[in-house]
Amino acid sequence: MTEIEIRLARELPAYAARVLEALEAAGYEAWVVGGWVRDALLGASGHDVDVTTSAPWQETARVLRAAGIEVHETGTAHGTVTAVVDGSPVETTTYRVEGAYSDRRHPDEVRFVTDVREDLARRDFTVNAMAFHPKRGLLDPFDGEKDLAARVIRAVGEPRRRFEEDALRVLRAVRFACRLDATIEPATQAALVTCAPELSEIAQERIGQEMDGILATGHAAWALRHEFSVLCVAVPELAPMAGFDQKSPYHAHDVLEHTARVCAGVEEFTGGRPMAALRWAALLHDVAKPACWSEDVSGRGHFFGHPEEGARVARRVMERLAIPREVVRAACALVRLHDFEIRATAPSMRRMLAELEALAPGQARELAFALLDLKRSDAVAKAPACMGYAVELDAMSAVLRRELAGGGVWRARDLAVGGADVIRERGVDPGPGVGMVLAQLLAAVMAGEVKNEREALLAWLRW
Ligand code: ATP
Ligand code: MG
Image (cartoon, rainbow, N blue to C red; front, side, top):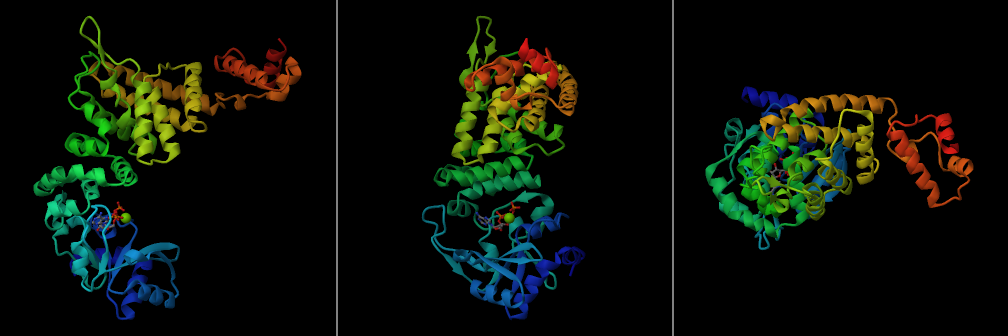
């Protein structure tokens, strides 16, 4: 065993080793495969562990249960069961290959095989096609270790055929390239571009998962710059961004390069941990600019209404891709408000919170910081003249933090009085009138005209 193999053997979690041991004690062969091996070689052994085995799934279930391990029959049609050892799940799948892919989406059949090498050969990229065993070491028939070290995404086997079998691999290639900071090997890249149109046959929901996965790598900027034609097949609404000259003194770049910079910016300003909605908003914030463009008499470009139209496009795209409802709402709120004018004053911050609350109820607090991060990224991605605004935004963050720490008020329910007080003090009947008074009161508090203290509010109501 090489030094690296010894390290991997040491780092393999004990719960995974137990699954391997139980299967092998019963006379079967078993290996750790896929993501864990790849990430562990890179020095990050925290990936969940997948096991591949010669045992038919019924046997896997029987053997593991006999060893006192809990087993769930999670995907038996594909030979998969999930073992749960000490609370950790280990997906365990019988060696298999896929049959003909007549609809380019689902393998028509899976065929179970006896040789682990056949199982590795059906996997998508060389870096994902390695198996590891703590005693036998690394099994790497396609030189995945070398590609991983060189940061290259290379299809296993004939690239064209592999993408034709399953067009989703086109997006997977982009996602892994982003994630591993890799390049795509030229023949694989050529096949990927040729086969990208076949993505249209893939379920929108699966495309959505891959797009979300690409954003989650934090390297969407790379994908926009290097694989834009592929992204446009997945999300056709992106296409007009390329080469669109903004004819504006505020913009040194076309919408596409600007968007790539904003995507990189939200990573930078959040230390690589933006919320999912912020990543989607960065990608889509200017998506409607080309459609909203007009030129004035001086030849300067304007984009009236692009945040509103952008939010509509973002909603359409994200809903089609089956992104979770909360994320859609939050992302659309950010797109809608990315040009909302704000100043470093408490009333301005409260207005921003109220706008966010109206668009994404319950998410205003988190989204307020996300919106400042989006605005900051947007500013530095425009033209050098806009950099000063980024500094102003720091002052706004400070005001926002102070406002929230001081129990900020931006919803009627934050007020220190309620509907019953309005009915009593104003003598109005229960009904919509109460809400209107509360809204006025909220506006007065948000504008700083009255303090959010019970006595002060009651006095305001009586007055
Ligand atoms: P992640 O951390 O993104 O889950 P992963 O390597 O675990 O990375 P999965 O999508 O969970 O990726 O798939 C597990 C393994 O199954 C992959 O490493 C790859 O070997 C194989 N695989 C998954 N999807 C495909 C596919 N569409 N075509 C070929 N092989 C695939
Ligand atoms: Mg996985």
